Length: 161
Image 1 (cartoon, rainbow, N blue to C red):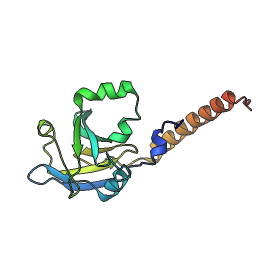
Image 2: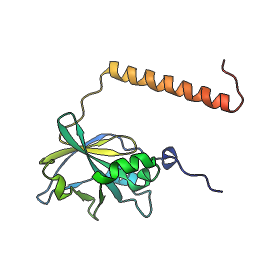
Image 3: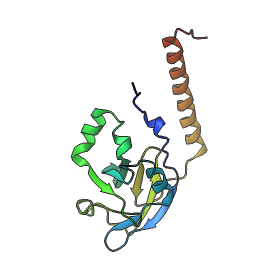
């Protein structure tokens, strides 16, 4: 019996920030680094879900590859379904922002921001990450990782040291 693949098994990781300009038809070229990540999915590699998201007073657009969404919880899929659009990348590497989102997205320039399993389209580059914030994130990640390792050890009959 084949084991179900997890997000980690996909080996996908969108990283970096890439500046782009929209053309007159409201198309924008997806960074080649992101297209390379998407190309590993044979059938749905260039298909993704487009979801508008509010962050503070700003609207940004998230792009989730179909292969990623298939591995997310049904609760997450149900939550995004009413707001999602299905998009594709054309043969020139461009995406079109759906017309219904053009009222929110009136940018001439945008930033593709890698977020691991998905990427975002935003009107401005993300803030520079401060050393203090990075240290806090690292501490939380290490703490969570330690709890996970302990839980795995206990489930396999190991003991906590």
